[in-house]
Length: 500
Image (tube, rainbow, N blue to C red; front, side):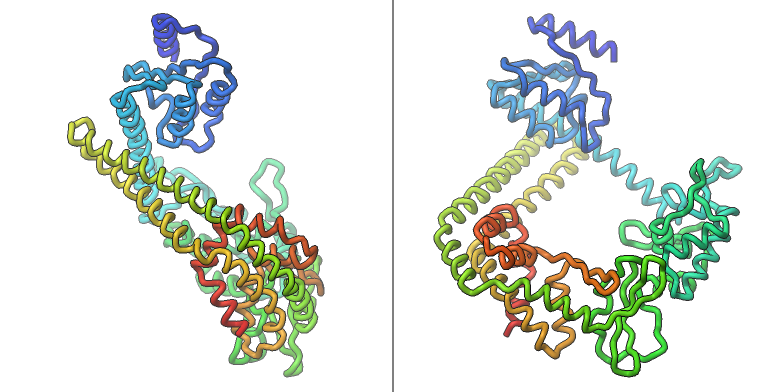
């Protein structure tokens, strides 16, 4: 590092440049948040006169094109010049195409190096997973140790494993909350492995109950793999506990052919378990939740239904307001078109830049300045980027014509949702309606808490305060992308069908 500083100091003296500040970038340029790099950029932006940023090599400053965007912007504005000592490259406002190409090539090589490192790590981790090895610290109840051959291994914790097994067995019987389970574990001597030996919290116990590692499987990015370590519990006991946790424990009665209206849709605010439905005396439906102390509580289904109905009633937007919104959207169509055109223009600019980089890469390859490995890796990356931009442009083109119509259609359909819910005899249809409108439902005692999916949260805001203009503008600009997704998912068509 001292040698680099000396080289760059001598270089600046030869170029007649005055040294005003030195930065040492020892952070990994493969990490997302590069605070020191951002500090350099911020310092450059604050200067009143152009400055030269001198680095020993390109890869000491950047290892991907995402930094090129920031640097290139400052170069074009005349705020900075880039001097790369080892490559002999100077990037300024008047930089030649050759220098710019050499800079891009150096960044490409650095990025290829980072990708290669990443691939090596992925291959190593993938090899471990295929061999049933867990690539990290074992969960509570297990210990990481070294074998006689100095290889890593995971074994059952002789102190905590027996207690955890008893807790799994207790939980599988049903009727016990995680809070009660935590108290029971503490009484049996279960402690954390921290120096202060804290009590295991209900939240941590819930995570333990969700972790299939204890029954012999590793859960990695949504996929399960068998591991080679000793299982704490059997797969059968794990399945029993999982059914209890998800609220699917069999009740002492037969379910009707159709699912109950709220089955799997409501969470108990106290126990964080799925609220279940029970039929009592053959005709009365009750939802089962839990108190803070962990005891069962029963709430009549009609009490919850009346609260759901009240929320749906709060989405009713008067017809005159919907008409006003429709008129406003038509009047502001010009601004809408301008916004769309600007978005498409920016995307096409990105597409042109990507095409230029593809052509530059081909030229470098034909001139034998890029090897086969780097060429294939970078070309694949650029083609993926081009395909992504092409798809985004097509999405914008496809969704633009019916963008405003979709907003009005959703407002009208949501305003009718209370009627559908109250009068429909189709239980599946009502459940789909609830899943479409509500993001979360939580039961605390007899009180139903909730949050709404977009754009129903915005519709409720309009219905409650009648001040629609700023909300509509917010949807048209900030939440435009989410409306596009609703168009692609055919949500409006579904709302229309159930309103018919």
